[in-house]
Amino acid sequence: MRSSGKRRLIGALLAVAMVNGATCASAQTSTGSTADTSAQTGAVAASTQRGRSDTMLAGDVRRALVRTPGLNSMNIQVRVRSGIVTLTGSVPQHSQIARAGNAARSVRGVRAVTNRLTLRTGPGAGRRAASA
Image 1 (cartoon, helix red, strand yellow):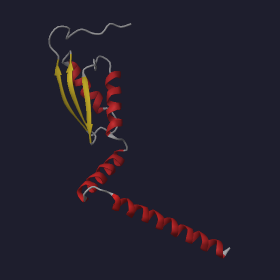
Image 2 (image 1 turned 30 degrees about the vertical axis):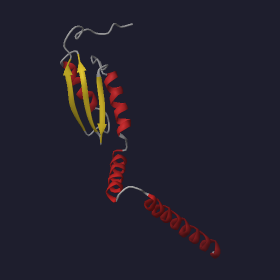
Image 3 (image 1 turned 180 degrees about the vertical axis):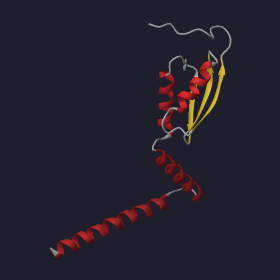
Image 4 (image 1 turned 60 degrees about the horizontal axis):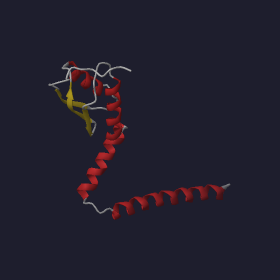
């Protein structure tokens, strides 16, 4: 029984040593500067704290826009950086600008929304797509 406990302890110590060695080796093989490494670490930590990547958030915001009743999202572009959503493009009706902003804000993980949507003017601006 005693030797079994010693083996477990030695195994655990070896595992910790291997993890530490792998971490050090990874840090030494990095070609970036110290500032680049700390910036990457900060970005990863921020992403982990939010629990969702900017790519995932962008997809979720696009889905929210498509599912929003009374919103024509065909000409809306979505960009996400550090959880902050920027909406650009145009919509045919003024009320849709606010609807799009509200839909983006409703997505879990979105920290803020910059709404730069404009009102589309000209022929066909107020037309709705025909329902099938």
